[in-house]
Image 1 (cartoon, rainbow, N blue to C red):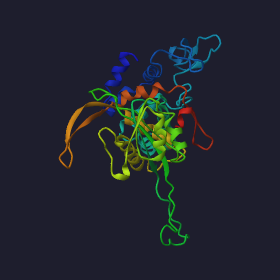
Image 2 (cartoon, rainbow, N blue to C red):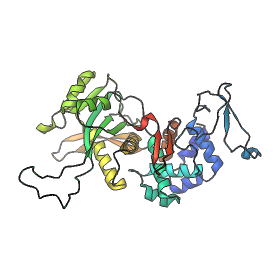
Image 3 (cartoon, helix red, strand yellow):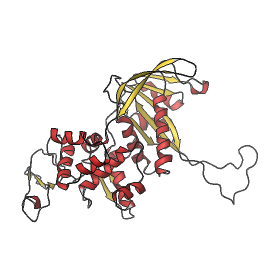
Image 4 (cartoon, rainbow, N blue to C red):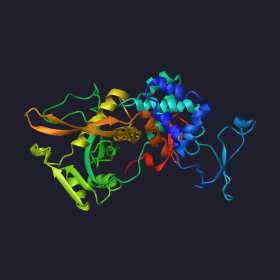
Length: 365
């Protein structure tokens, strides 16, 4: 990205700054190109790094649209724009609307519902809903986690509504209403450095079929390097899978052991709480089919922090401990991370009005 574009993003702090920065369509296209292609244009069809611009309406011609390029490879000759093979492919919305929407979604600590986003942008609720899913698809991360990694599981959802036609419950467990909670696996990487300016570790979560050993292997083994130092509770599936890693330590929650020196899963449990608060306070309900996309967004927000220092805090018992102080990366600078992985993650509108994901990263594990 050029220094001019980076300076422009760095100066966006308020809503007024954002509106002024994204007011011009041509400027937004140039900005998007610098974020999607930070090292120069790349053909999305064959990966060739040389292409030529086709003269369009912005150059006095009538046929070609602005920002159209053609691959210089003799075997390809594919014509593309900056949105080709991305979640913005074939969009009818102006690019300035897309950038404003992304900034607004990243500005909020826990996200923004499609209803509120539609009111702010002046678009329909289904359009805002698809914009939100485009962001969630682009922020999914594929690299393996290393270092100290915490794993934990939790549940989403609640108890099913009671049917008035059901018989009254009897003694014990007879007649109890079954729950419809969805099991979720969370994986949180601890920061490798706590000096000021260091980034937070990644956090990921996904819906799993159950809490069996097979489900744990599918979720953890595909996301965590075998040389990592694994932290977990005493769940049997975690104990079994931990034998495959370089080191594995557990805390015994059933015996009220939550921290033993540096052994704990507090980061993972903190992330689990963030997921619950986000869903309850912003989205209210998410379907299990699209839950992975929402979890991508929450995990991305978790990682967009930098260390600002440390402070001494006292517990209720008077014991002193050092706490890491964090500061959030400005939303405009987060846009670089969002669009850097946009190519190859396509999203299409389905016949029923929903979305069809054409990307392997949409499903975790």
